[in-house]
Amino acid sequence: MQLAAELEASLREFTAAGPAELCENGGRLVPLSGLSWEVRGFGEKPLLHIWSEQYNLTRRVIAITDHSEARLVLAVERFGRSRPDRLEFVRTEFERPARKLAREEYCERLKNLLAREFPDETLESLTTSADLEHSLSGNYARGVLKHGSSHTAFLAVPDGETQDTLNNSLTFGLLWLERMRNSSYRGSIGGLRLIVPKDCCGIVAHRLAAVRAGLPITLYERDAAREALETIDPRRAGNLITWLVPRRESDALLAQARSAIDPIVALDRKSITVHPSASSREVFLRYRGLAFARWDDGRVFFGSQDLFRELTPSTRPAFEQLLDQLQIYRHPLASATRHTLYRAQAERWLESIVRDDVTRVDAVLDNRFVYTQVFAGVGGEHGIIDVLTITRYGRLAILELKASEHIHLPVQAADYWLRVRRHLELGEFAAYGYFPGIEIQQAPPLVYLVAPALQFHPMTGVLLGCLERQIEVVRVGLTESWRRGIRVVTRQ
Image (cartoon, rainbow, N blue to C red; front, side):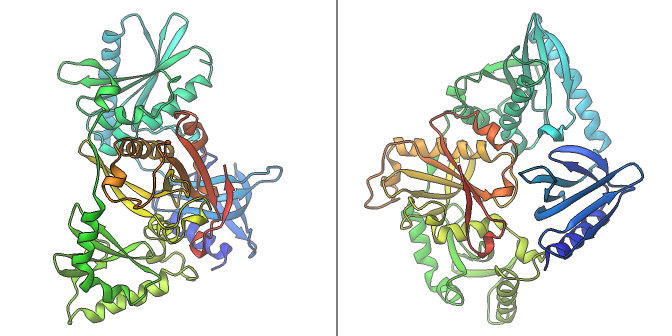
């Protein structure tokens, strides 16, 4: 499908689904209601014209970089600019009254708490409003306290938020600190106070070890029952258990499943890969990254979107039909690029390509040793490292892959770096069967952030600048057509 036709279809689908607003480079422009739009031209760079009585915008579209229920993101060219801009159609979700009321009540309690805990300081600002221009989420309360001529930024996580919101608070805390240091407070911001609910600081404390020493960040837990703050020492709270599954467990699981899964893999050896999960005692089969079957205790189940049926002689025709659909729609040259099977689990598809030959990312990597979806646990939480490999000189390398824009990529990669470094210091990689016959360097692991070049979040550089200098990061930008084969266009 040509870009012009795909763009028009995507816009029709997105605008028909509900209210949205138009943003450019993170800044809100105007609600979509009352706007008209038109796609002109049929070449590789069609023109998009958006207008109303008070508004007029024309941009040349290079690519559709993200299309989900929440947003439609376009890479666009504007006259006089050497780099592409980002035009976004963002779904506007109206908060439920109960959530809005809870936010207001939390802010009132937070004001009183800050006044008691820091009586010599004055509250200058407090908000929970999202700031799209500076990539600041509305899930947190943030503000500034003043003491004499100095100021302190703070970011607080309200009660009842999800674990992901808690874990991601460090990302937005760093962005808020950076925002305040570059605002009218320039030079007077002394540091950041990060406030989380009681007994919820583990992951944040762990990740703080990756932040460079020059950034003064103090971590607090809020005890809602006593309405008090407790200062947390990240060196103690973040010293959590981290572990890897020994390779022998994965190998033993594969050996058990081999007789049942080998005939399935043989149907398309280039596209079907196997992925043992020692924690659940299952083996997943993926077609170009998309899970379509799993082995569990001697039986094979197949399906998609968590709707699995057991593979039996009577269901064999349905299984073959599913495989036919995968071969048609989950193909690099598929014409129906908006089909669910084409779009689903894009990062896993990218992982399958990288796994096939990591030297496409960097020629220094050793293609003999590539471990995907390496399980690592930290204090009851767990994280999945996309790709763990090693250089030809024996230095460990972590590859974090994203197919679309992801603001948490730097902090998430730093989290995995801390874990891998810990296992390296304990000598567990060799003991657990990783990289057999290789002398592993004790140098800190390398980190590769791999994504389409236009999909790195604008704040990626800011967040990388907040990390310890020991964390050596290489950003690898790919072409948008990575499904047809990886081609690196930027490496920095």
